[in-house]
Length: 275
Image 1 (spheres, rainbow, N blue to C red):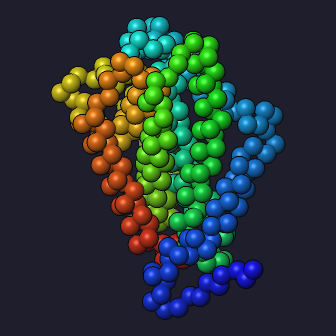
Image 2 (cartoon, rainbow, N blue to C red):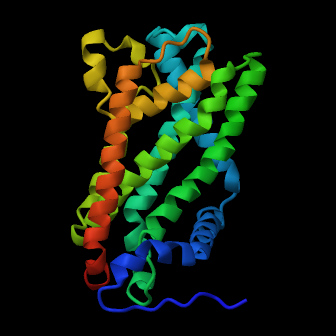
Image 3 (cartoon, rainbow, N blue to C red):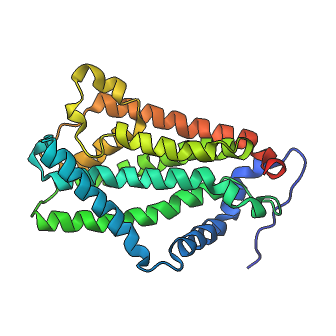
């Protein structure tokens, strides 16, 4: 079977760009698999890091917010399950956003030598973080077994909210990845954004403690809607989903994704020269 040929013609690049993404689909797999191997190469416990990190963070949040601060849990669910249901999407976003933001710089040698749609690089970085998410999800399953907690039918909608988490990670990552090529200061800004984002997102506590008059404004943080959605699907029961806030978060996610793709495509032609 003959492999498809990529012909670069003046004025044709824009037209053929999305078709080229499909032609280079195997590159998604190659880059993602390479990053997975590099991440766990020469580590003592390997993939177990994807289990240990969220578990220890969950323990700390449960002690600080649940035991010491006495903050309420959602719908009477065990506090560790509520915390972990919020931590899963957050850690996926934090890892995916960071990897996507630095992906172009990390692959500068490839970008400067050969043509392919550059959008493949940050997208594959987000996919790698999804692998860690699947591994960490096993802890949530074990917590449910330990507390004999059975999720409601809402859990069937979990893939939908996972897709939203993927889009917010990719959209914001595209913005910073493109900016990072031109302004290298962003490599220092990314850790600050992730650290501050964890404090202003309802990871270790329920968003229901936010005063009603501020909840809509609070939902301008797109991860608020994502985390609330995860908890609604996993906890179910009497959990009250704040739908106006989720719709606002969804609008922000859409802006980040569409705007990120537009800005990335607009600046993509300069990457090889600047990097």
